[in-house]
Image (cartoon, rainbow, N blue to C red):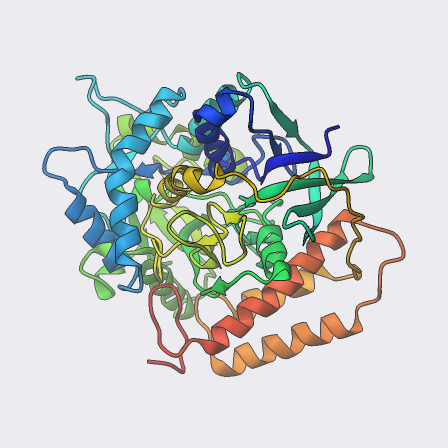
Length: 500
């Protein structure tokens, strides 16, 4: 395999794949002067993007406009957003949708052949482009299909990046672990794009893939990149209540279609918390559910979709309907769905500029692991896919600038020391003390417990992929707790009972 590339992209969700496809449209790539490698930890389609249900937000409908979408984004983000970034991303939205359609993504249409745009929590208008309740899969499939038409691209699947270093010639060195052959190799690149997704595996329950172990954030921190607002973790209000760590997501769009939240007595309760009821921003709905659970016997509440039109359930939510039946034997047309808030999305992360570049020259972060300023203290529903493809496009001018040095210098890569870490212990600590509701005492206990785990962990005699991931989780968990301790006010998804 080739050892040196102009650009290496780590991650194959919408952030990584759209970055690659935008690069493929440049003249330097078409002329054969740009070598690119994309690395997937699992299979190309084994991503959080593939699991995204609701859709992607972009202005299109009559009566909607950029100002409304910008305002909704700022309100949801507690006005902690970077307004210039919000304006840049929102105004780019329609063009980004056109790009997705050009790459083969099909969005649902009405009988009139107009696009069927949905409404979700926090949105003042219907602007969610979707493909039933499997929008992410439709996008992922289209991007992967487009990817396979390209030449001069090296695709590496089932491979985990173990270490990233900045070399003396200003290039990056990556140590790779082939999970199928259990072999380690090294590659080098002039520019590096981290698009590794979220940090869901820091918690007991998440809607993320098992691969979401915060690898990219770990690498960026090791290189010295700025990390911002890591404790701004969004919990989705309606994860299906069931056994296991991976929770099936009940899309917000179902509430947009009329589903109602009810307590164990069958009583609707959102009227007590927000005038927007079920369509209030996710942080408000999640805390309302937690409060209801605290005052009842059951450790869950219900989502009632029995009054939603059957035709809408069948046409818009077939996967949710099927999964409820398969997983817990529930017919959502006739029965209430047991739900609980679960970890869903990281609003903070690696600080980047308007081109997606980090504080480390040549290092880019695209997608959920990045802190762009778009989300502020809370992500507006369906703005995440939009953000990923937007910054993939914004990054192209900087990514295609000539590298300063020749990338043919071979340098020896050394792996860091990995320790034997109990991942479940970390997840339990994070879920208990760094979840939806925090306290100063709880954060102190978490920091102390995580520090003890790190200090007492034994060095691994033999490399183990699961323990590598556990090391990433531990390091990022400690960073998240420290960030939470440094927050001085409650805003958006960050809520500490000891702060105002």
